[in-house]
Image (cartoon, rainbow, N blue to C red; front, side, top):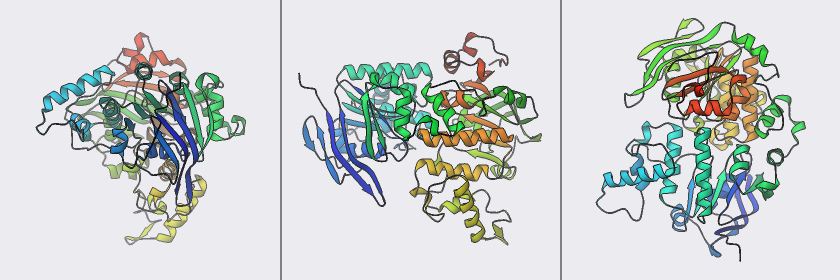
Length: 539
């Protein structure tokens, strides 16, 4: 029986000014297979998939769909060929509801819409695939993770024969990720071809049948998943052996690949940081109550402390109060009840400007929407929070020479790859954009760092760099609040772990007392996984 190839990419080459994004890439997507696509930022993964989805046109190469050569010059053409894609940066109409976004542009949409029936159908598909979402919620009121679920649902609703998923489990509990894996396997068994892009090597090994690695625009490795290993994939992605990495980088790679044991502390001594955890609290939150945009409870009597020299990780499915907690801590959302203290000062009613003036560093999960002004230069972005200070302004006039010198020093200190500090931030890769944010936020040696999914969408190399910097800041004596949907990240970096569900703290524990099953159950709403903890918090 001849093998069925619903999609074949042959010799795909795509150039941008000064960059060859794809260099003669061949890729076969097979009926009944989940195909893993790996590579660092800038490796060409997104470009290759954007070509398949009709967003870019290749200079060279050919695309075959069901054995026939095709020209895919628009997403509409791709969709008509049965190709669906969930993008890393969402393409949703923010004022519209979930249902309105999903039915938007459907050829089968009648002239007179029955929105109730449409919402019922969306809810049915969501239940079928285990996606928790309110069909009538507006996109602008949803968290990043909830918006990602809408994108997943959008493609599933259209029953694409070829489905491209870009890190779809980033906001799921381990149990939900397992459920999605079952769904993908079932889709493959029904004759669909699935492209699964993920930086979680455990997922790739568990979910995929075949895996391809891109590096610097070229395909450098392909194998049946059963014939390779996490260590081999990591080496192929970064182009180096693990031993060539610095100690901190190696520790995180090992945590991802399972190549060895890694303690929570960056220096291999968790005990040293637990001693630090007994030091003075830098951030204290007591019985914090915060509402969401719908004026419904988002944080319900949240209490915790972070001491100087420790990282408190926060685990939880996105949409369980994390965004509202961060906004309350950074002066963007009012606290209805409770108390926030930073270095002994009452910060409950601080404005965003007061948060900045007290050198609280904030690393956002949305670097392009919130963290940077993309059309503005690297230099200007490094002083977005600092431009009013005397070092950069005199009599309300900016000191451009001082700003440029400051930016050039940060580019050197943080290894930011850029042609110059006057280049627009939009021209840089995602990893280098994140380095700009790190450089700006950490340049003032903050006592408190609030890091919200700081490696979201980054490859292993860029994520390793972010982790190295956070570990260095912790070792310097900073208190770090690390919110993440990536349990590998939390287990590798945290000294203590707090799990949040439906706006409540389900439990706080030293990282060595945490395990995947226990944390997963807590993330799903079981109080502390049914087990006692040394720091029990009653919901």
